[in-house]
Length: 74
Image (cartoon, rainbow, N blue to C red; front, top):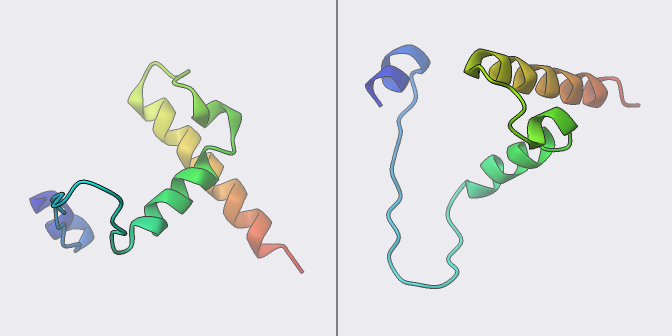
């Protein structure tokens, strides 16, 4: 949390579960949508990579491909 605050200037808040059942959490859809976009790429669905840096590179490639497709749409 201190790294995120210093480097990225983000405030991390941990949301604790209260009652059992379905409760909509604020801004949770942003994370779920991003995971859905990344999981559209076959290599990011399974854990094929042995090194974390390789997996990080595949995620960056997936997001670059998604962003370039969205930017070139008419």
